[in-house]
Length: 166
Image 1: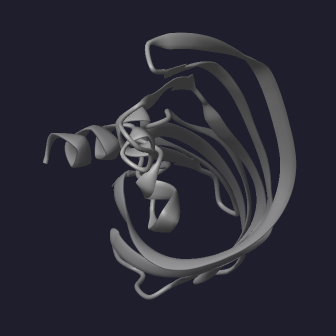
Image 2: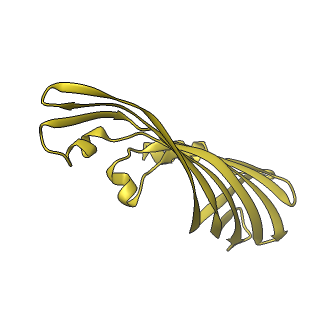
Image 3: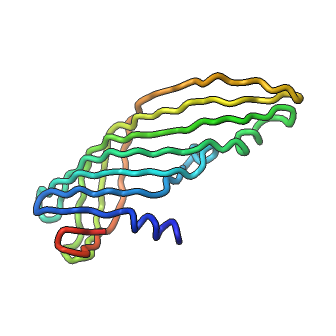
């Protein structure tokens, strides 16, 4: 519940008649297979939106997310005579375009959205491993790649003043 309250406090927007800028910051929860080796991280995003009609926006989103590596989970997949101590920060920078469709016109405005775009991913592996009480260092290896993505979802904007929503 504290995480949800923090996220709501760190998600706000400024609006003019046809253009808005929204910033979000909060926890980045790993999902699927990614959650097996990475811990909950942090993300911050900024969304630039333009109102096409009273209930349709197009938006461009960019931001930054970072997750830390889960050594305990990784080590469980090996036999007991080898242990890894790795530092593998994983970052993602999205560049997305999408649309939002608002379902209401009141101060509380639920919406659905769809976005597509690119995710610029980077991770650096470094650390050490120990076999039978002998430790070996692993030199830093940096990897970069670009992936495409598609997402859909829903949210709510609540107007707290003429030019500000949460």
